[in-house]
Image (cartoon, rainbow over all chains, first blue to last red; front, side, top):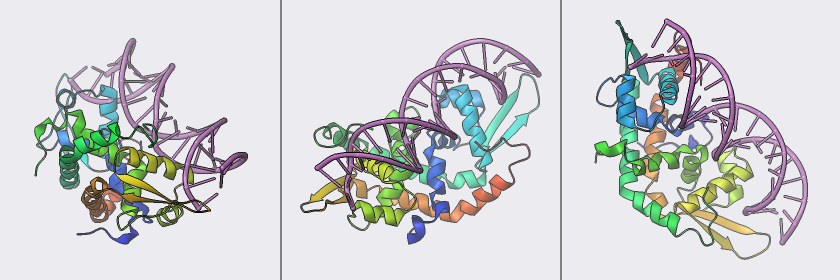
Length: 123
Length: 123
DNA sequence: CGGAATCCTGGACGATACTG
DNA sequence: CAGTATCGTCCAGGATTCCG
């Protein structure tokens, strides 16, 4: 399928990018790809994300219907997050983007190195 | 191809998301998909982007080797921007994301509507 | 027209500390 | 362990203005 031309004008079309925009959204979704995980596990698996930001991210994802929260009874608190069917449909997109990064990452790095002369400063 | 598991730890893997993260990057790349365009054309085509932000975006894309700037001699200024081969390789990714948005956009909207109760507030 | 300079705002992100 | 509350920093993005 190819995206229609209305792509630019139609704000709804930018939805996917807004979702993938936030730094951690895609990463968290990806970390959930093969089953529900508890916050501690997620933090360990992802690395470099603070508890607060993880919570915020999960809240965002839940709000958009991509993730579900499941509270298991007991003490201490046990909670886990998993992908919804909708969230699962986003995995191929993330996968493709990740594959692109692996395939062309070095080219981008190279371009950045060689950019200094007349191109603008690093944004 | 499926993205390796190192996905999360490897910072280079997040490259694609950093590129698609900035709100306008993907949109501008998409607007350039069928040939070079001049800034005015781009602004008209995209809609809702300020001249300043467009300039910044193009600078970013140039810096990453995704776009080239071509200055045609003459007065008044005539400049155009086009995709590099590298930038062109990103189009399928953008296309897939756009296609996803068209296919599942309404589901996300619906989820947002129904989210108010126990789910967190809109972030 | 292209784009740089300036000022301002909101939100993402991080660190820390605290409650249940 | 899960989540909230503060506080502070940084930057994308919008509006405006001015120069070549």
